[in-house]
Image 1 (cartoon, rainbow, N blue to C red):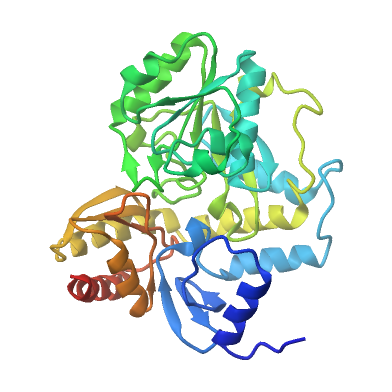
Image 2 (cartoon, rainbow, N blue to C red):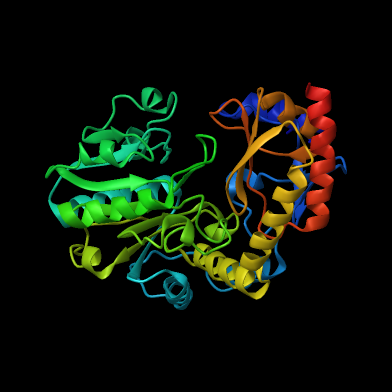
Length: 397
């Protein structure tokens, strides 16, 4: 068996034995701490992307690591056919931070699985089939979720699509109203469309959606796979001022929920829960003990370290510093889900930043660079980023 000794060996072996999916950055991540990634050759990268918004508490937060380690010494896994202390704690903790009237949790493994189950519950609760989602929205890569995705090439690569999906224009309530007849079970949306370039609607749009759903007996689903678990500076977008205080009937979660351990969840109201019978939903690994320990550790770390307040404070500072970079046309989004819009394409800036050892993300909007850093990002690290950005835009230009 070949011994891996340097970056070239690692990349050659991965490319030989792993199916190619993403175009990878030339970084071999060996360990992480806080907002930093360290390579196998000792280089350090400022991580403002968090591995697709997953590293919410930062890399290897000590409290999360301890929670996972302690659980591994007890039992790694048993299905939710048995009761579990750590699962009970995870459910109780998650519901304690959820906006009312969300009172029940369903655990699964990923964001796409959470969205699939959210849509399934809406259909069970209403007896209807159609789902309205939005242009620019992304909901996952499994069959029903990718069929609900109206962004770029994704529905094409998901063909044949699951029937019953309707497309409305994000931010346009009249386009929704025209579709929301008595065949529609749910309206599902990312309250901030991340992959579309970090797009938000006016607060009134979310209120109008809530009123329309109540009027026509439609379930409202927020896909908070990216916006949830503190990323916006609140536990959830649901109930926040940015969305006029609106709370949906179902919230789907994943990404940062387990700080890197795969886990997803749906939070639902009692009304939705009342329609779910035994064996209507199921998942082998959902609610497994190690994942539940990661959830508890993650939520406690965010709370104990005051990360929500940190997100709000550092976001304000970051926005202020970005005013110094004239090539940044606008800053979109909220909290630590931000889109930096440039007059020209963002990819050269992304590449120039990577050369300066700063990891960021691109989006389907060619002019938008995405930032999804850990919630523990500090002002001193913002300074490092803005300095690197100023150099990068000059280099890219």
